[in-house]
Length: 289
Image (cartoon, rainbow, N blue to C red):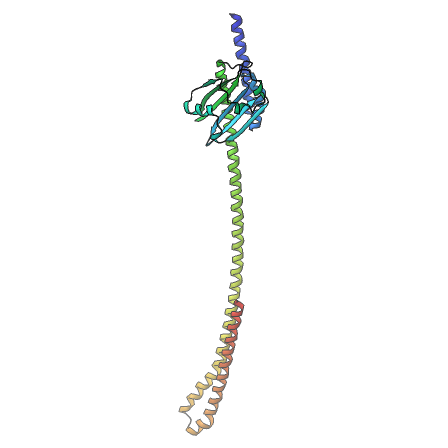
């Protein structure tokens, strides 16, 4: 009796040490490839199996992970990639034990031809509101024992935590890349807008200088014309006032000739004003074009 108790105690201790080593190594993994390498090395010391496959629900997809000897596979796929018994497990949540093996699935593994009276075990576990199906293929050479279901649950918990961590890390990396790309696009757009604003400021400054110059030119023309017109106009006004002082003969001989001369001079000045204004307007229009 003591021998049996000692053997059982020793077995538990070996199993615990093997699981601790497995869990510690899994916790350090940063990729599914590393998880696969650790599983390939350590999982055989915890469970008897030829093939083990997990499907873990992540959002609207499933993470599939399988191990058979040295053959490790993992991928994020659609629900349509679930096997028939996995869909049943999700619907009924009833464990499966059958010799009806889906050969279209296991034939893809190198060890499938070496199986001796294989059995398929299937379970559905729930962890953190996620459903996890576990499929295990064993045979007479590597029989699975129902007493190992508890250690299988611990292994599944370990896998689930690490897979979800890697999934979130990848999701965060995608988000960060998307955010970085968006920030880069925003910066490029801001740079483009800044260049447009600077260009518009330069255009406005140039146009303002141009308008100021044109206004100054027009003011100069206006002042010059006003001065030229004012002089003969003043003489005409002065001569008209003499009509009340001079007699008719003086007006005919002295005032009217001067009045005619001043009128001719004023007409000449007005013609120059018109020509100058016309030329200035033509120049301004040409500059605008």
